[in-house]
Image (tube, rainbow over all chains, first blue to last red; front, side, top):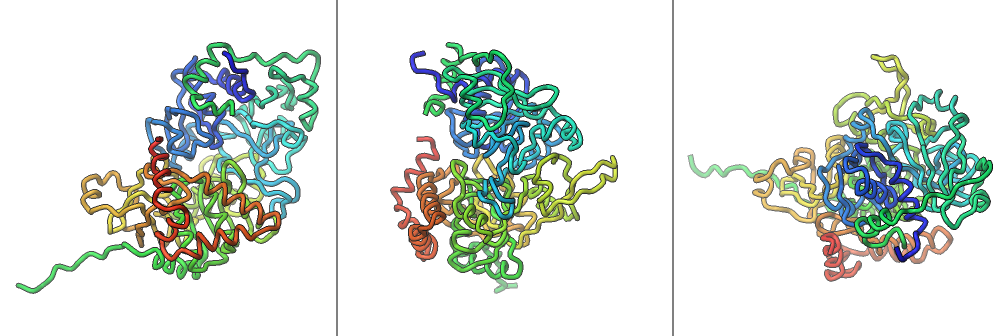
Length: 255
Length: 312
């Protein structure tokens, strides 16, 4: 591949590798990266991965759009669905979903409501969130914001819109969150996962061109770096070729 | 027997201004307005503009899963007191007037989620006192959501949530087609809760891109999404969802929404002249939809949005 791998392409490849054949998932609204990951997984190793649970079933996007709330972004799809699926999947369950927010904290909690102040006297009011149920009714989810700074990765979020691991295993159990919750945090700089015992976020690997020290400097909490941190496995020739030629035909992931 | 004329069925086709007056009168009784569509798709924006031009204030606005341009415009026009909408966003950026008004304490934006709003509409549509919800855990939204109560499930004994009926006094919908009786046909792929909103509301007013002959409906009844007995008035408004999309007819006008948001951000940081001019030009100025189409850019401009909807 001639052009350099973009940080967003690296994110897509990391996420795609974690989606398994036969799973059912959904991309969420801000779906550029999630939909690309789903499409790449389907092309490479997961032909039976299906997409449902929102307003459409199994889209075949002709190219990537920034939002899935756009009929054109579906390309063709196998069925049109409605709000009913939100209730339906509350009980049937998805295997995976994707979230990102204004703030993310050390336990993977996500804030979309306000930064500073209080809910009804906010310093900055965010958009809120449509869907709070998939963080619980989906077996797992991925956190994949397209920026990674010390301002959006903070020790404690100002408001928990989407619960991650709350304040650890006990709090999670008390709240009745019995699913895996957030599994990976994939950003343009690095991949994080969660300590199995404490459920605190830790640095797993850094993308090419980043050092662990840099990633730590751009994160508002301790990433628990102990010893050598591996580099994120870059996209293979095959992954990059399929991604660029069959999925991201308009170059949206390199913009 | 001769001379006995067959009685005629009443058409529900209404003019835009008459529909706005009808809505305004109902909302003065109870200010709960519900808006159909998705964030930038199939929003009843022409009806919203007509209501703003007719004068409305103190509204409680509902929508699900979310809204953007239309509710932000209503807030800019000073028509909104409370927002019961899970997500309020232009997707690629925040809603400037929503932000400003909530941060200034002028508008109350409740913390809600889509299950709650849809559940409340389901309770209303089904005529039951509440809808149980068993899929919310761990979010701070649960501490603030004014529509939820915790209850004991009578079967399992578990603590679950319940939401009471949400019964909008008026719902505005936008569909692509209807017949003159008000039978609606949504032709876009994504239709979230329009059918539910219609069944949950006291009064439903729909805009459509075009009124079709009766035969179009009769030849394909499974294509009707909302039967006319739920619909009080239907208004033929070409490009009635603009600047949001009405697929498959026309795409969302991202440039228009972005330019509006720039004016809103300027107003938020102290300079409201551009936003005032925008409202005069697009909301209070146009006497009808033809005026509005000209104010936006004319037929050629809309032809581009039509081509974009066809992916050209």
